[in-house]
Amino acid sequence: MARFAALFCFSILVVLQCASIDSAMAEEIGIYELKKGNLSMKLTNYGARIVSLVLPDKNGKRGDIALGFDTIQGFMNASSPFGATVGRVANRISKAQFTLNGTVYKLPANSGNNTIHGGPIGFSKVVWKVKKYSPDGAIPRIDFTYHSFDGEQGFPGDLLVRTSYTLLGDNQVCITMKAEALNKATPVNLVNHAFWNLGGHNSGDILSEKIQIFASHYTPTDSKLIPTGEIVTVKETPYDFLTARTVGSRINELPKGYDINYALDGSGSSRLKKAAIVHDEKSGRVMEIVTNQPGVQFFTSNTLNVKGKGGFMYKPHGGLCLETQGFPDSVNHPNFPSQIVNPGKPYNHIMLFKFSTL
Image (tube, rainbow, N blue to C red):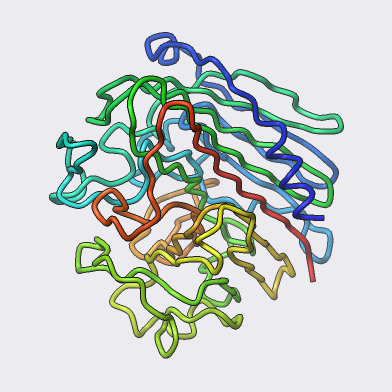
């Protein structure tokens, strides 16, 4: 069923003509809600992001499992891109530069000497255009579009981008991201940066949640979280989640917690594959993620300390991120799956979230 739903979600992708950046920035910021069955989801065109996701626990009690803020200003002020579409290139680019077709592109550094999440004003910090909005009915859906101009944050070429959120049957959320390079080859790595807590956004830490990650290998990093270029086995390391275990079971073996890219099993193929399953035993909620991307970043919000919805203080390990993606710093590691998108060959990223209870 999940595979059919994801294929259906992929089939509804179409090429959209986006407004210019000037008109996109002139768009009014709004909150939009999608509803289907017991699941409701609020989103905003500021960063094309998830604001909330509400669904029942095993006892039928509804709760919001997405960390965030009560106001748009809260999202604007946050140091992390809660729930947002992140790009043009999510994650890290070492030394804030890369070479493409013989040209060196220098980017603004916003993480020490490196670039992270598309630069200081990446896609999570701009206002997107609402292209389509169907709040309920058989297929509730919203499409956000953005025109990234040639040279924006140092990246080459004009890029048309679309992020779509669709609610499907059986408590499934499909997120699709499409990007079309108009005139130059350019790197593209779009992710959704939701912070999840299946017990509820205000339930405390996620250390007791059980997680299984379908990856036999990961990409180790240096002290600045820049990949070394190696792809190594998870066996006999704290990164081994091939069998489900709690997030906190070996977290103390790491300096701060998890912030690492996994090479998903079957990452050499663009076919849909399982990325992870998370289970919160207290609430009974289960989240399964399917994707067509080669990697997934597992992050346990290791330094989180911010006042969120309802005034609740989000502390370290208050949420987890599972960002399906291309490998970090792929532009500087030829052995990693390429993130280069050429004109005429669009980028497509599928994420299918299936929620249930046990």
